[in-house]
Image (cartoon, rainbow, N blue to C red; front, side, top):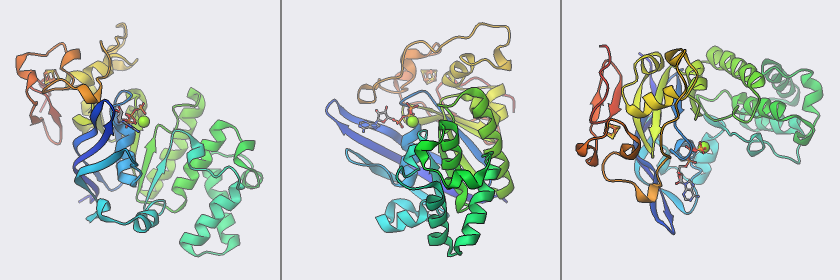
Length: 324
Ligand SMILES: Nc1ncnc2c1ncn2[C@@H]1O[C@H](COP(=O)(O)OP(=O)(O)OP(=O)(O)O)[C@@H](O)[C@H]1O
Ligand code: SF4
Ligand SMILES: [Mg+2]
């Protein structure tokens, strides 16, 4: 049976702001199994990056994890000190950021950045480290990898930098990669190429991925499972194809209607009405209620988590029926 490698339980990540308390993550629970790709999807401000940052121990003042646990192979990451977390980061769990410069050191040549990491974490000699780094850049679709290794980040294009940032995340063959919109800033053709190369590498290595995106279309090309996020909560989850074919939550339906996909072929695209709520002034009960066409008075109370068919669930008073 596939093993659960990361288990987030009841996690609340909170920001104290001048406007009040904002729960960027509100009692969020999520499991990630060995070798699976989870698409974490939601509009801007829904808490996708904060999920990744919480796992990586990167939440900084005025933010803090105030409730819950994050178990990596049974070990609670929230209980680790800074040095233990630093060891784990990059080695067993790595993150790719939307801005590749968050992973790259601007004053070091690419070879130094890759080779020193390999030497420090894997204790291999310089020649072996160069060979491994070259192979990885090649696998990430980087032409003339030997020449690229001798360059500085500022000498490379945005797409090339992101390929190298992805290579850095893959370098130590971590169990889990958190990819936070790594291709969003790139043009569509380069985006598709990078996704293809990344997918080939993670499939070969059996790496688990939390693929963070606001774009359900991109998530659907990558993910085995989807977790749909709204106002710090996961409102629907399940196998990607089932969620896409038969969404149960009105928010998932709204996201689907707003992308060109087979579900809406021939019909005009529709944006979800309204905008994402301020986390400091959420309505009582369901946070999606002000934008929901199915809202009723009971929606002013917290919607229960409802198990649908198989491994699917949703948090809604009136979920759409899905085939069993
Ligand atoms: N430094 C901060 N101070 C106060 N609130 C913050 C801070 N950083 C994040 N938040 C809160 O956390 C919420 C979630 O932010 P997060 O960055 O996770 O959103 P996201 O889903 O990644 O959005 P995007 O698609 O724009 O990247 C924000 O709506 C905001 O209310
Ligand atoms: S709980 Fe009510 S308001 Fe919230 S999504 Fe479901 S139907 Fe809409
Ligand atoms: Mg983000």
